[in-house]
Each structure stands twice: as C-alpha cells, then as structure tokens.
Image (tube, rainbow, N blue to C red):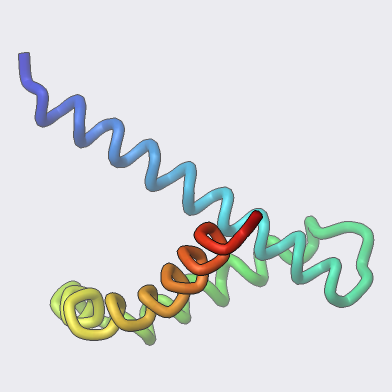
Length: 91
C-alpha cells in the first residue's frame, strides 16, 4: 500500500477546499462592504484579480519558497502572538 499517494490526495483535497472557502469568504465580504446583495457577479472578476496578483507576487516557485522562508514566519507570528494573548487572558 502506498501511503504517499493517500497523503498526497488528502493534501490536494484539503488545499482545494481551503482555497475555495477563502475565495468564497472574500467575495461575500467584498459584496457586503459595498452593500451589494448578490455576490455572484464579483466571482469572476475577483478570481481573475487573484490569479494575476498571485503571478505578480510569486512569479516563480523559488520566489515563493524564499518568501515562505524569510518573510512568512515574521508576518504570521504577529497574528499568532495576538491569538495566544487572547486565549491566555480570556476569562
């Protein structure tokens, strides 16, 4: 039995599900900010904007790895330290 194939399938499924959920939430929040009832007209436009933005931010795979190694830890640590503060001091 090839456990690598099972793990890869689970990883791909969860990455896809997470990306779809983030995109859905961003479209709904965008439509709520501008007080628009129907969010469906924005899905195509925001999808194209996200694709073009991702190509600008990470033009190559090594640049993505460089970002993750040098910048992401410091960027994410600000949010996680705030979450830890809330969890510890919440009564």
